[in-house]
Length: 255
Length: 255
Image 1 (cartoon, each protein chain N blue to C red):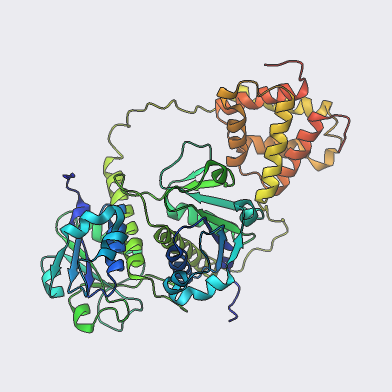
Image 2: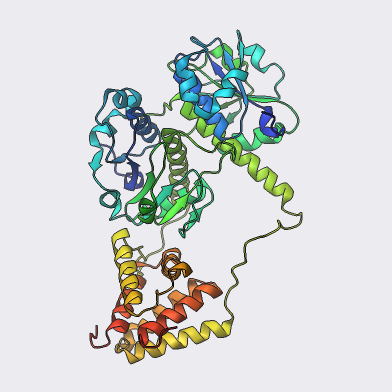
């Protein structure tokens, strides 16, 4: 079945080590109802599975098209934003979305130019700290403080609904306005997850080498990495930061 | 368990002749995650049921509290608004909500004073025309035109999420003018203009020394300084950036 390509096709729903195949199927159905197509499964416990197929209903072909990978890194390396969902906000230095609609607006804007991902963790234990470290943002859907644990596939449905709405409103805005202004200026793309990771690692190595990280309790590295993450450097800015870092570390290597 | 009465307790979720007990349970869980408590079942095919209890998870007590009635009329007679959900808008003379959030705002406003209801139909056939006639409004959640059929419990989750958000925003508006909440967390002050200038100058000197600014036309320094300026580092972050810069320039001078 060929369908017109849309920005929604740049949105990747990533499910990490899902236990119940039924949740995978229900998530696929949820995606289908909201125009999403890209499902990625990281090390699912049991897949393919009859229960997944049954729960998927009209979303069954998304299961057939789904990518299955071993590690979360492989699912999101090329993404411009990676939003990790958490039932409770962790005390981690990641930029946070307070609301589903804030997340959706920002993601659909980025999805015009590059893939973006929403990452959902295990039913019982959510995402590990290492997996959260793969993310560029956190989202914790505001919920009843006494019981904030949405079923996995229902969290997917809520997020998909937000994304679809943000997409519809963007399209309405685009068509409502007059001709797009002639653009001479190149668009400022965000860097890929991989490029950002590379910079963060270079920064860590350089500061370690310089003896600046000798007080682990001070969380110096985490704070600096968080600063660069939340500053959202453009691809060009990141390139300059990387170059500057290299130059400072070794003045002999002129760029 | 006694919980404080809230406007959310005036919202009734009504499920008409649900076929799968699992959907009743999942709906109860969805309600619980969003602070809703009033579940009414009109002539459910199979209830109570193990599957409903299993899927309800932390929402199990909502099943125990649920009212079971024979006719939709009996579930909504005293309601100030009754919103019927439909996968496709019917050609019926009922006021229609175009979006979940429009519905939620209006319902939560009314719920301050009287009960209101959301009515969900059968999995396969939705609501009959007579049942729609019991309603004051229709809502059709905007969805993929090729496949707009959300699973029943997922539609409940999406609506519950909208209602909870509308409720929170109403409360926020009410309390906005009162005194600021007591803060335990130290505030992140911005740096002074002087501190920022000092950093920018240090950056310029370091990069000049490292030979990184040997192409004036590239505006490398301006772009990097602009990056740091627009990133609005906190006073603490700027202090770390300054320290990091010093360490990279001269590793012998440990801070």
